[in-house]
Image 1 (cartoon, rainbow, N blue to C red):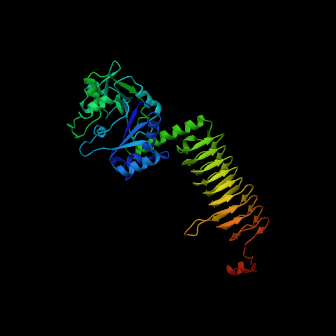
Image 2 (cartoon, rainbow, N blue to C red):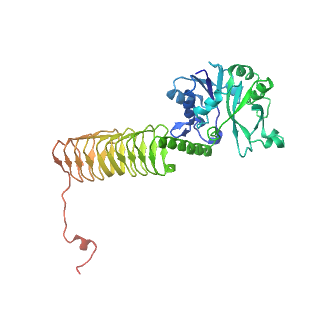
Image 3 (cartoon, rainbow, N blue to C red):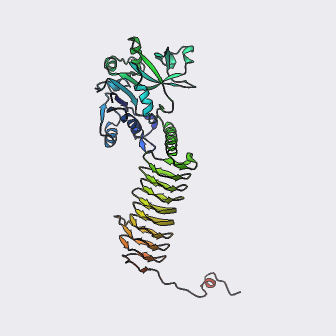
Length: 432
């Protein structure tokens, strides 16, 4: 890996209108900066993230997930701007790839095209149908001549559709020479990284354009951009899993976290949401169900069920309006309208409609243990902590407050009372 990578993530991102640093806003389950880091880690063992705004918060988030990343605090007071961000960084390798932390859609393949370009400086270029608002990249004989800001363009230059995408691969020696020589003699009083392009051209260095896809190099600067990037990322994730054999019904309605994993033959119906590091294997997730950081194996969920974090379901069938939280189910049927939280339920057990595990007393959570081949009747409350042993029947409408031994019927009901003639008396109706 003879390539150093630096990721610019120092900006405040005011257009996001958020107290959260821009680069920590999530796309498909990960902060956008993490997507850039994932692509960078595949091609480099020397990665530096440049920070300034909320330095400690961003550094802590990154360091918790990426152990080999270096951090550099930009002196934004004295050296603002993208050029100022690179001052004082020591790079290990002879080539340096400069990325932006707000480009979550960039792929390793595109970065390799930049890093493999045989040039002193390779810059990413996008051809836009409407380049209005962008500086133009002037290219002659396959080499970059200059970047001209739109306000400075001649009428002929305005007709150019090539614009700067903001990612560069530069020889380290050039950065060591050009970054200290940058000037902030401009309207913004900032040090612009783009100025090194003209410096390299003026020095007779080889500067080449690498044309890239707009979708990959799209920067996220607002909530609108964030939503658009999410859409593009979701399409990429869904396409990748369908290519691996996952069946999806109306895929545009399905949300899949980038950390989710599918194995075997899986079927996902419309409106499903899969959040967090889920593992779904040989399973059918039916319409409008929500799966959160759970394992589903050899079974079905839904429609309209919710499997919450910490759940592990195997060979089980969970029906509509059933919620499972932090529970282990093996070979269980829970057809509808139940809540199973902090529970372990054994093979062959049937959970009737309206059953709930009462696992929280207002201070602490408690476990419900249900054995094998247990039949739990409808509208049952299991007051945890409680153990229901194997081959037991819990009668419908029961409230179970103590352990139940194997082989018995447990029933807890108030006796039925019948009052003759009450209806007519209550509604003041006489006999016909």
